[in-house]
Length: 130
Image 1 (tube, rainbow, N blue to C red):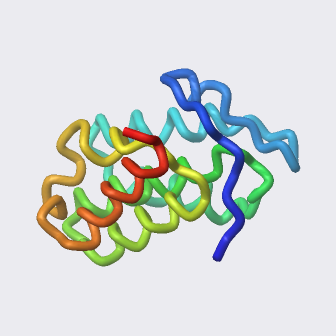
Image 2: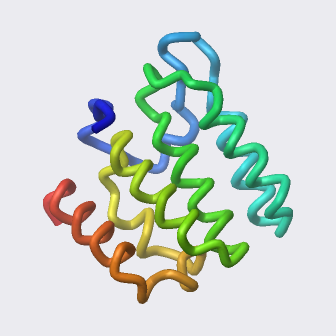
């Protein structure tokens, strides 16, 4: 299993404060860029940008899991269910603890009925204490 980041609390500022602690790189702009591409419906570009975040390899970044979460959103919107579920599970393994990441919005509508998705939601609820 991958080591979990220490991220006991999350709020809306997580995206803005995302820092690559090992490299000193500011991940906030990259994370916001993926979000903007998603909003614009540029899914392939958003997928590439989120994969670049994952491929950065900066696992010392306490917000590294966000890249997997964004990748999950993109591939779910592209209809690639297994890939989306894999990315959700990786996001949880890397420290995501917010069930709202999966339940708020419509990014994951295509996979909400999948057993692995339901397990992921329950896992996040247990981790967050909700």
